[in-house]
Length: 459
Image 1 (cartoon, rainbow, N blue to C red):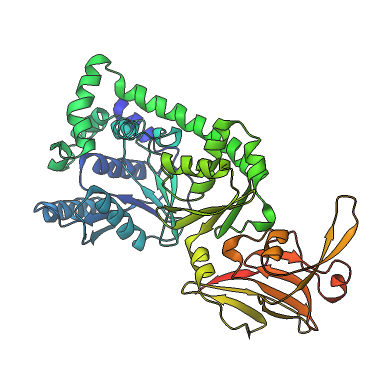
Image 2 (cartoon, one colour; image 1 turned 120 degrees about the vertical axis):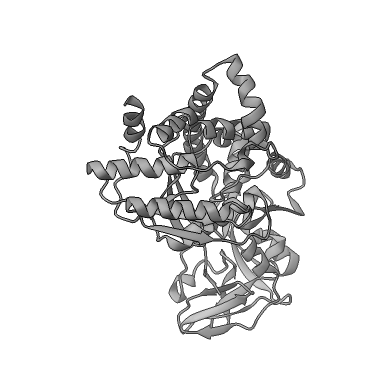
């Protein structure tokens, strides 16, 4: 049967794996068909081990007990190992249910284990339409990814979706041919959520206009995925060119040179800000947030107190500007900067300068070097090079010191002096370093100015 061969062939490019293989099995047509395809491959000797089936018991419908019993009995009859994973949801929403399923399955899996999912071509088309309605960009319109790494509570699992080129009708024919005892979830056809509305009301109309609608949307999503990859590679290089490397400490702090950003095409600037802000967050920032940051970049007054907050999926971030630099702070670092000063202490050869509820900022110093907070009354001798390389000795304090050394306003309560025999050598802050003594400093203690200063440790 050609259909059977087609469905089995899509599993032939299953990545070579050394870790354990799992399969999310709801008991529906799609996941039961995927599990049975794995069984057939295993029988033929083309799949070394059967995947472990994971069935998440939501407890949201009366039929959930019956589905769990069906999956357990069917899987055991075929020789699968099966785990029933009960979960309790605070919110009875589609998003909460999906997150709860992933959490429950990841708890049973190890790092880099593979989870097979039965999303198919029709799911892909529905997802692309949903994201189009919500105004997604090229990344979102690329749809569901066949191969995807997902981090859950610090554990990385690999999602693999072999059925994305197989239609719902083909899977139905496969399930009928082998008389699989699948169950239908009635909520898929109720029309109570956007996906169900697209599936039951919009897709039938589109299929009347073009019977190949599903295949065409899926193919377009693949084109967009490829285009998005090219765009991201290009923008990544532009970000690297604009980064101030000596101040960038992933994931805590990232700093861009605004003058370099302004030298780029306007379209590239917008995409660059979008990708830079998102970082490794799963979900992208919204369009208005990107526009707000662009407006901050082009604001005429470069010295102001504007702070732009963004709550990502995993972490929150604060974006702010000082002169020609654009900063993106992890919320934990920003909170650290707001905490009151603490006494400078030495612990296990580490000089601790700042503490918050989440982080410790520290650095390692030789025994003959000491560090103390900068006082407002301190008058700092600063050796400054002029345009013709002459050296001017200036005594600075307070606002004049901040302006000369270009110290952002949010760092001014987080400044310390590194001294040798009470002679200030450096002024420092969290990841920042200003060398004060030009001629003699190397005789006492030389810090690497090509790297961000200090270390952060999570509590």
